[in-house]
Length: 335
Ligand SMILES: NC(=O)c1ccc[n+]([C@@H]2O[C@H](COP(=O)([O-])OP(=O)(O)OC[C@H]3O[C@@H](n4cnc5c(N)ncnc54)[C@H](O)[C@@H]3O)[C@@H](O)[C@H]2O)c1
Image (cartoon, rainbow, N blue to C red; front, top):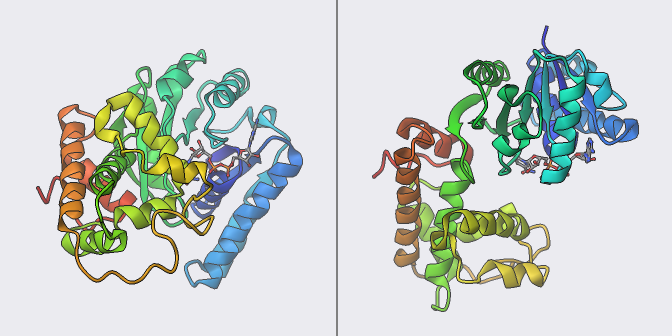
């Protein structure tokens, strides 16, 4: 029986805890204190209850899963777990402190994973005495339904760790894709590049954003256009990732200043009710073939760069885009 310790039981931690218990694992949930860990357990149980309501999970399986969850006071209670999955907020200082503590407390043969969306697994590992056992396991939100897990090897992650992490993702019922570390990993790097280029193409031109989204959906494998996707992700989250990727890779991630003023004005997309495509806009009438062509060309170019750099295999890049971004076909397959 695998015992999993989750550190940070917010949005992602609770989802991952639920997934692990459904897969038959016992899960110890740690958060900033015991109260918050208890809230995390309740969150994970609520995910199970919602899935039962929607007919996606058998009630008996949800009950059994709920019983496998236990809140603990902190990392010190995870000394004997087989696997640790860290899902605290995306803050390098905080995550470094957590991984140092894991290093001191958790038994040396345990697998240690971080669910970071974009921080360096290498940098986190370097802060510990055992960087070879640290791996990135990038689950997608909501982890209970999203099939993809990017398995991120940092510079010091050893092969045995990758093998164990891949087996863990399989045991959780997910599809692991092996990724050599780079800013953005695979899915975010391809999507954000394509979105930034589409925003740049539309900036300053009289583009109907809804028509651009519709043209993207009609003309290729993406299930959603770049403007609707930005509003769904949240423009603050997107702008933070985009700015990091522009700092890492340069101008191809430049969005011509599309997102920053919206974020500054508090227009964050769906969660604030206003964003790139404000509610109540008239339905699109025409098409926007230029924006759609730019979107797919940029995605294809970034996917090719990933393959050329050896970040992931072409087949895995395509698989990641299908499972992590809902594309009906991968960007390299359709090129
Ligand atoms: N939300 C997403 O869509 C998404 C998707 C993929 C990856 N991620 C990554 O997952 C990680 C967690 O994101 P989230 O959205 O679940 O965040 P969240 O804010 O919902 O949850 C974070 C949890 O960590 C807890 N926490 C804070 N400080 C702690 C400490 N010192 N010790 C233990 N627990 C502590 C918080 O109380 C909270 O319960 C981040 O690295 C994020 O980048 C998020």
